[in-house]
Length: 134
Length: 134
Length: 134
Figure 1 (cartoon, chains in turn orange, cyan, brown):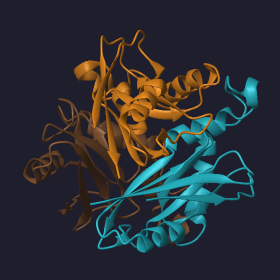
Figure 2 (figure 1 turned 90 degrees about the vertical axis):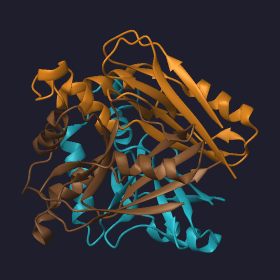
Figure 3 (figure 1 turned 90 degrees about the horizontal axis):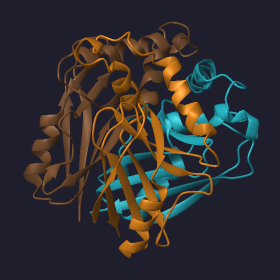
Figure 4 (figure 1 turned 120 degrees about the vertical axis):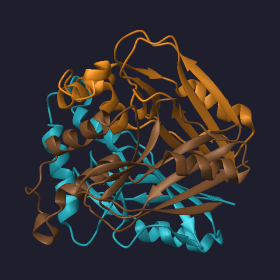
């Protein structure tokens, strides 16, 4: 089964929690054991598993990446001025594959699934969710 | 098929080789071709494929991450004093998906599967291994 | 289905676009919906999804990693003088799992699949591609 999720992003950079959509897709699928693959299209976005107790870790992620990957010093900036966005996306990666356990998404209490926007705002980021059941 | 692996960690940070457990699960499954997904729950741990000739690379991994992600300078530290642990876990990521080839785990000679502990010691880190066969 | 791809690398470090081989494997498989896992063996290489408009982002990736992971300052250098290659490979990771949508690989226009060589040149890097269909 596959489901496409569209997320509107509002800022240049930010994390967007898509856990509820992923959990709901898994729970509605009837699959009891298997894998969920969450994949974002576009070479300036990524998918990260991270805590969502409050916004602090999300802000830390953006600030950390900005520190090690500054804006405006890359060869690709001559094309699009977004070399840093590409490097962040490639480093974090576009996908995570998560187990489905007893019909539910196998995250722990403090794990959430985030879309990472590194070159927004965008009217829609397209995320493809794929369930493989046993 | 799914199997849960519990690993006790002894230090604040360290890599724990879980290759034998992963290989044994694959070889006992009877699956000849497919994928093994290794996923650690908890937002301050990760899974990395790395060499295990001796401890040197494991020590280098911990020291490298400590250098680019120092302790004590993150917004999340106001909550739990472990902002660095979360950043390391998100950067490395909680999972790897590895091919099963001719009934065996498709690692090369110098590839091992490691649990990365970034906020230990913990009595148990829970790793979910999922096999998808053809 | 599984297919092994061998890539010859010509330099110490570089990105090699393997998108066409991955797409061709998917399109020839007859699988309409599922996942493609692309996995490189060897602990000094990796797989990254990245743009391939021109060479600029590829050069930026190599330069960025060189900056945060310098050569010659790691414990593992006492063994093989390639501690930096291992750290880069572990950080980027050996695999990506990509959706198959309507019989095609689910990359977006600006996403390509790259082998990352961090310790070349090598006569052959072995990449295992695995398709899981529904």
